[in-house]
Image (tube, rainbow, N blue to C red; front, side):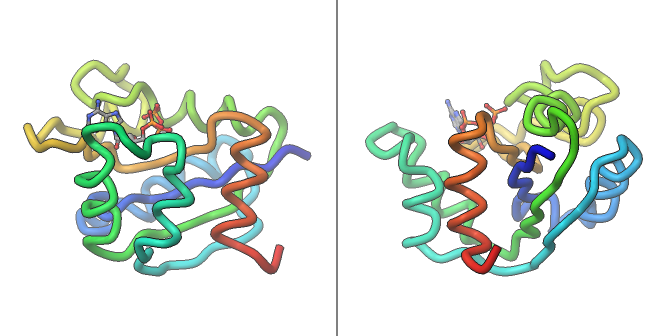
Length: 138
Ligand code: ATP
């Protein structure tokens, strides 16, 4: 079955929403096949967000992402890459549909980074690359 990398970002962990995010993932019928809490370092984040290097929000994004622990999960299921992005909702919480993680739980704080609770891989190529980065043993 397809796999994706899900991150509960530092804002989600700090707000105590890890269980709620994983509950929604499992309730949808996806399977958690790996799970770890860790604080990411610059090297990992630079690779994870390689496509955003050079963008104005890159430095604040990395700073936010290393500001506290994240929960990383490998999630498996049919069309899970698209399915998790659907569960997550659009990037900006204010406009995200009710019923989605960001729509129900996210807020726009007016900071330079969109603190939107979760990350999910956006393609099979990204998923393979990101799972290799966060879970090299898999
Ligand atoms: P989604 O596109 O659904 O947000 P994603 O997490 O893959 O998924 P990306 O476009 O890859 O989103 O951007 C990565 C992260 O960088 C976003 O989730 C958000 O936290 C932050 N970000 C993206 N665009 C901006 C922006 N214009 N200003 C500030 N932060 C941003």
